[in-house]
Image (cartoon, rainbow, N blue to C red):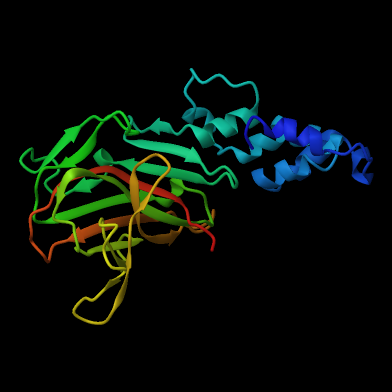
Length: 284
């Protein structure tokens, strides 16, 4: 769905006439708009008539969120709704005074949100003895949280499902970096939780140590341990858990995501937290 897709489609599209090609272009566009961005790109390979209809603003405006005009900076001038859609997929937009970023998942058009470290609750995060707010060029936000030292590690973030796509299963991730002298997270399992505020959260054990064994043994039973993975942007992420955003007619819910390590009170240092990212869960 990038810039070269048009060239490839022109090579793929056949000159053979299809029965549906006789339909008005606006009618074909309305049909294609009921599918998905990925399906629209496939439809464009069917014939010349479908290619023209699938490129129309009628189709791609349907894939944009209803509030897209308020999200796009006035400086971002695009010539078509499809180009605007692709821009919102490839270039996240800062919202809420720069404390969140917003973008779309390219294949589905589902909304994605990242809460900056300033937009989540970090215990003692405002105490300069324990955390420092720094600016680094590779971060999405103006400032990120750098851990100086703590024994009690606790991070919590909240998001309302009304800002997300309905009827969608989402995953929440902590996005972080370890500095050269990062200490206190080796072989340490951290309890993560995700759930509706006021209800019991689903929990799991995660770690910030990529070399840690994949099994964790708490006092009772054996648990799988979720390990971090490197992202394409050079940061690391570890999945806190998943939740379902519900339907359009349901009341919106506030989801809380947390990471707690309060049992082993050993010193922890030199971890950088960029924020919590929420995006559609992978379909296995």
